[in-house]
Image (cartoon, rainbow, N blue to C red; front, side, top):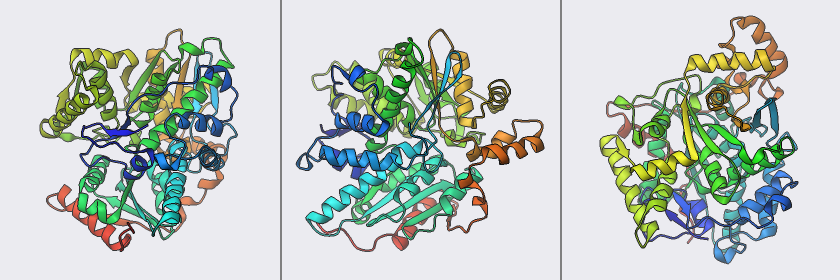
Length: 509
């Protein structure tokens, strides 16, 4: 199995190379050259597997079994899965909770930082460490400067996965004042020497653009050996495929209708739901994937019109669900590649898809919009639908599920539940819950009229012990201010900070 860029070119990487490189030099994201086949007996053979073993079986479809092929020997890959998911508080890792007769909630927040990003980033941290150790045993001292942008949960999960790991520095950019207090504290109270938090005067899209620009800077990348932890990294998507299969097997135990499940995913950067798309492409039965967005609705507008278009003026609204306050969804590019590939009539469909995506991304950069063909739009609508949910609807949904089902959800999960309500039919619905409600206590509490009584309940019954006193701990964070030229100044000051605090020597060759 090789990996190629969504924007074309002759480059074909091994799994190890794709994980370490993260983003292609031409700005594209890596995708597998083909979708592998599931074992013929997977529905029976995998039905009762624990989560780490299920993750191993799925990853083995994409990861070659030898180091010589740029893969990982099976015993080592199984060890990495067991190590990564031993940090979760629930034996099922991602338990499926029935909320109503036709609704189930897949709780993805039982990891170290109480967010779904832990599922991928506990593994990615261990993968980075494993690959560096293997390379250092062979020759020299190899280091990695991990660089990531976060709207909240990616940063804390990445830091939890990489803190104090040898030969790794991690730099996390977050939009100053646009993450929840708990999210900010989870990142900035980690004082390990290899952890660096940068608070950027801008939006998440500014942070994401800085990361992409630095990855595309060949000289800077070669000097600092950048590694990606955002969902632009293929290993993130691969690891998330597992919980779609886990949800299916758990649902089969509760209903005979699991093969028709509809999966609803609150999403901003499109990585979480893209993993579901790959699960569907592999052969996992489901009727449809529902994209649930907040007021930053570029994805919902695409499914309504076939046009992928930035909001006027590039405005990003600050909402109750800040992890979804994104203008351009990075992982959407991977879906575009598949839409182009599957509708291409060229003899080399991969190359043709790369050319199409390159043109689309240039149009998006130059004009702020791009459009797919009617055939591609129809293909996208076969597997997906989309809904936009306002803050008022988010608050109402939080109240309704607490009052009627005694089930408290965070604002992102509430966006998912409201989207599910609109898309309800006779099929069972699985709504992905991306974060523990305590991570967004202000938004949750603001949904109730009796703030004082609800706050007392929240402190006594909702707030995990791990978060108590977190806001009062010492912090370390560097402010990255914007100058008159905004992005250029943010980019330069971020580069200067990495030069100052990162590795000063280059890797041995």
